[in-house]
Figure (cartoon, rainbow, N blue to C red):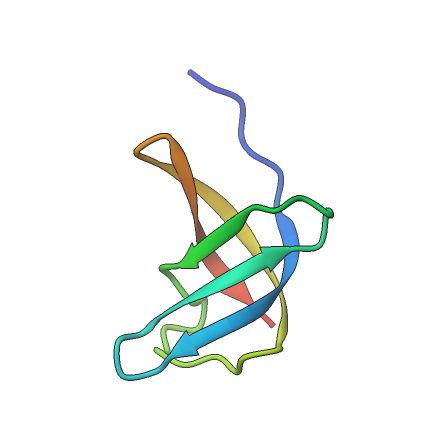
Length: 70
């Protein structure tokens, strides 16, 4: 069993509300971009430029952003 991954903070760089998908750049200074896959309140919309916290979810050797909160 792997160790849990720490919750991160970042900024939504783009979001398409019709598709319910977007990207987040982490605040840790890395070049990692996370694809938004799960907004915590169940909506399919979050504003570009919004500061958020999220759980990095491993998928196919990369990470997606889940449980996204403003």
